[in-house]
Image 1 (tube, rainbow, N blue to C red):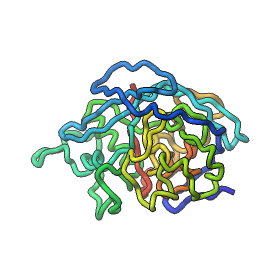
Image 2 (image 1 turned 45 degrees about the horizontal axis):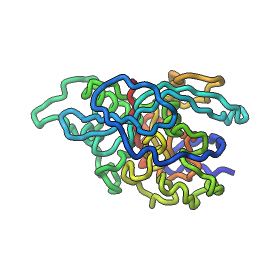
Image 3 (image 1 turned 45 degrees about the vertical axis):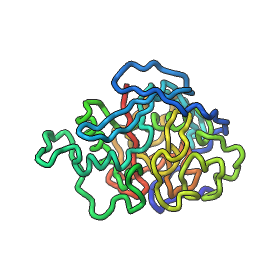
Image 4 (image 1 turned 60 degrees about the vertical axis):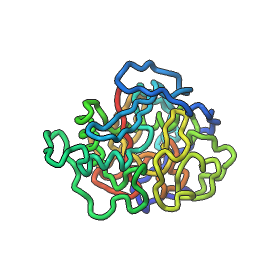
Length: 310
């Protein structure tokens, strides 16, 4: 029987395991840096040299990186339909190399992009109220993923960043997130699990996961610096564990047929969370696992990652 973790998150749902697969390694070590817009041709599912876009937040020296995710597809097994498999196709897009860090989020939260005499010049976004106490829980700040972020704050951050950069930033769709997390692989994780067949039995030792993710067995009940574990085949870090990541979709059952670039229903009660976190069992950190939370719900395990369309 599956153990459901609810201490820091709600509404966890089961998604069945896909077939195990070996993951090629060593090809995410070098990158091609792009510093402005440009047309990027679709590439094969496995990229030898991930294309990376470096974005600086205007008015600051803060920078972050996005990785190009090529056109592709993945297969999910619907747990509500006896494991029936369906294809999901996703067009190419950009996704943050890591979760949004405090370095980035502080600019938004504390208005570090404005001078002392400068006023907000638009109502295109709303900044959150300054928090009481330490929002990072004292776990670490520089280079750490921003936490205690609810969905609404993540959306406002995307609006603010889009306004500042004149580029359209947003949360990824659930399909985009899973496509990126899998990195072209078909197993439960983007890394090989064949040597650890008991990884799904709870918060147990999982040696093959150690270089790749932070979860309940190795986190020490805290977050860790973004990107401190190995990248997946697409050059993305922390797609398994560390912090849950909000995506743009409302929570609902999977579509009943093959789809292209699904965005979920137009309304709902809860938004989807992906990735698992520092407090979760390994099985909850799988590529296919779906969590959810109310849009205004905060948690020390909740963060987010940016996406940008081509």
